[in-house]
Amino acid sequence: MPYFDAASSLPPHPVATQALLAALDDGWADPSRPHREGRKARLLLDAAREAAAEAVGCRPDELTFTSSGTRALHTGVAGALAGRARVGRELLVSAVEHSAVLHAAGTHRAAGGGVTEIGVDREGRVAPEAVAAALRAATGGPALVCVQSANHEVGTRQPVEEIAEVCAAAGVPLLVDAAQSLPWGPVGGGWSLLAGSAHKWGGPAGVGLLVVRKGTRFAPVGPADERESGRAPGFEDIPAIVAAAASLRAVRQDAQAEGARLAGLVDRIRERVPALVPDVEVVGAAEERLPGIVTFSCLYADGEALLHALDREGFAVSSGSSCTSSTLTPSHVLRAMGVLSEGNVRVSLPPGTAEADVERFLAVLPGAVAGVREQLAPPVPVTAGEPEGGQGALTVDALGRRCPVPVIELSRVIGRVPVGGVVTVLADDAAARLDIPAWCDMRGQEYLGEAPHGAGRGTAYRVRRAV
Image 1 (cartoon, rainbow, N blue to C red):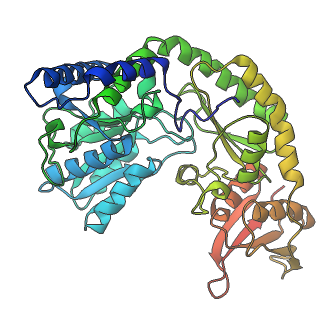
Image 2 (image 1 turned 180 degrees about the horizontal axis):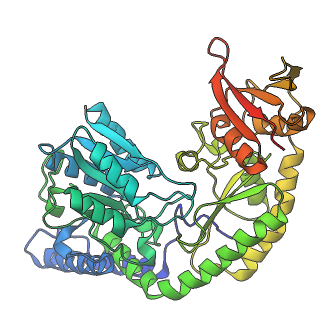
Image 3 (image 1 turned 60 degrees about the horizontal axis):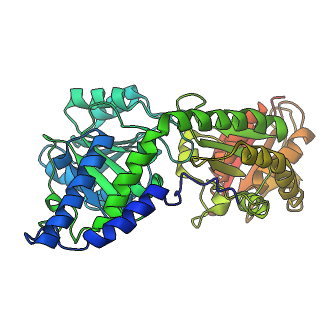
């Protein structure tokens, strides 16, 4: 079964497995002890730290191993904020950060700190100018800026070097979540803190890394611990750490050639999916992106049903649709970009993906989407309204119906009003707030805005027929 969900996690790299098994014999003892077994463990830990630091592009004594990439981000955010508490209390994060950073921001806000969200463009890119403006406007004193090196959902690379220059000019540290990009190369620029996660490059789950460059104010939060510079309490899992460092070095050896090959396969998917499947929007940057990630959204399709349909065809993919989310809200990344979320599919190709598997995916995708679209719900009630400016008006009652029903019904009735006429869609699904404006942008219709409907019963979205 082709596994096209590499952005979530990769299977163990063969080098990781070999290193893990080899390190089990010599890496079980306490590396802080001076006896022979402790020294063996210390040698393995030090060698792994040096290898990982070389791959990251930092000093070994700047790198801490943590229990996960999420823990690295939480520790990095909390420690940097605590270290700069006298300077400021404002945390600045891009709107497309990983949920781990957003959760850390929520904790900071709950403790009385300020949080500023920096918007992105329709490709998911953070503009250095937007960071500079946010720093100037930070009323509570800017303490830390958080920006991904590349987005995990759409693959867009961020201009980290330019953003780092902006932060340096303002005297504010920059934390970079490099979980997705580290397998492909080091992150350039004058960043201050960096986090990564081993299972993103084929290392063991349960190993992350946090880099705090010298000169960065940092105060570990929580009970003091003598291990890992006080930043990661608990006994080090040395065999897993050794496997993580070995696999990172191994994937880097082939990164340039394999990245170019996967980028070519992704270019093929980006070009052919809109030609094979009608009413599809490919999202994310076309050029400045990770090699193996492509995301597209299919109008009039339920995201969860589409993932199941592709799974039955033998393909494991992911989605940012609200239909596949436990919160029933669309991906915060797609929402921040202002792009369509319904019927969303993220394809992330692992190293070694065969060209034949991509071709078979492209062959089965049209049928999978068509099958899901055929299962559309029956029409919802439509009523005539008062003409607006002498033009026709219709109201679609999609209250209580989940995505993609509101947009499906809008598309069904828009042709029943004359050009200039208005269709009002009543909906209480959070995805409608994103999908209706995105549909208008795709279809050249005029989105007039939204207003509360009734006594807390959803929202009224108004669309004027332009074509």
